[in-house]
Every structure is written in C-alpha cells, then in structure tokens.
Length: 120
Image 1 (cartoon, helix red, strand yellow):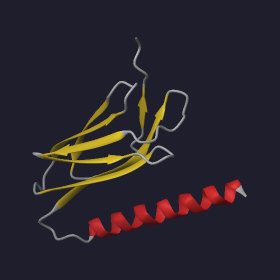
Image 2 (cartoon, one colour):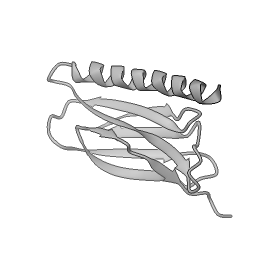
Image 3 (tube, helix red, strand yellow):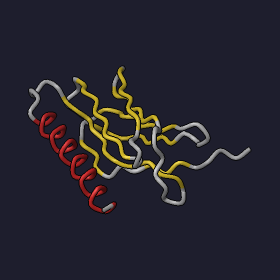
Image 4 (cartoon, helix red, strand yellow):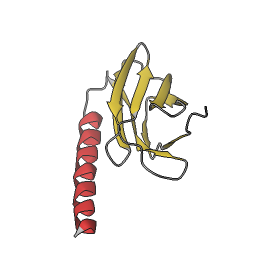
C-alpha cells in the first residue's frame, strides 16, 4: 500500500511542476524566467524538508521551502533577455549554506543540493 501512496504523491508533484513550466513558457516575450527544480539532501542521501531555497536575480529574489521529500521548485521573473547572474542558495539550521552561481534566463532541472552539517 505504501508504494502506491508514494507513486500517487510523486504523480501529483509531477503534474504541478509540469503545469508551472507550461504556464511560465506561455508568458509574454518581455518577461524572462529563470526556474530551478531539484532536491535537497544530506551527505547520506536523506531528504531535508523545510530547507529555505532562495533565488536572486537582478534586484529581486524568490524564496520557497523544500517539501517533506526535500524537493523544491522556484521561479523568478526578470526583464533582462540576455544572460544574467543568478544566485541559488539553500539553507537549513544545523547545516552549512549551499550556494550555486548560475547564468539565466533558463530552466534548471535536477539542480540538487547536498548540505553538509555544521561542525562544532
């Protein structure tokens, strides 16, 4: 029974992600989007729920939290049609902050982050 429930949850997540990407791709040509989809886990591969994922593009930023399976989807609109600097950060109390410098506008799929625990 458990594997079926997991399959159903993942299918709902897939439908939501697909819908968001389709909506973003139909925006007018003056708005560009940078999107990122991935998972956040620890060094052992365990998902990290409720990690804060932040995407900074131009002068604005978007934030979201990972779900209970460590998955996230984040999108940020911007007006620049050419390559722009994008900073994706992931943070969670008890872990070192992860940062990835990207070039947008573009959609990043499978942008996974592995957080390392803070050493005392």
